[in-house]
Length: 102
Image (cartoon, rainbow, N blue to C red):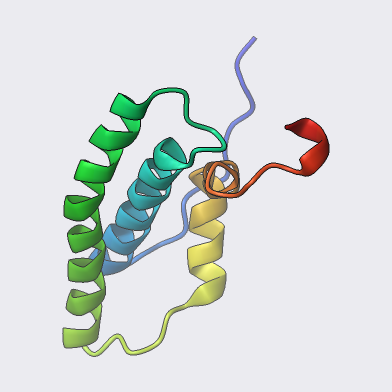
C-alpha cells in the first residue's frame, strides 16, 4: 500500500523557494538544539554550529527577494508550501512541550 500522495507544492519564485528551504533548515537545527527535545550535548553543539551558516542562507534569501523588488511575502502561498513540506511538525520541535508530557 502506497502512502497518500501529498498535495503539489505551490508555484514559488526561486528566492521564495530558497526562503522556505532555509527557514525549514533553521527550524530543524533549532529543534535539535532545544533542550526540551534534545538528547545529547554534542548533537546540539553541531546543530548550533550549523545554525550560523543556515541563518546566513536565510538572510541571503530574504536579501535576494528584497533586491529583486519582492517587498511583500505572499503568506498564503508560503504557508501552503510550509504545510506540504511538513513545517508544522518541524516547528513543534522548537517549542516547549505541554507540562503533562514532560
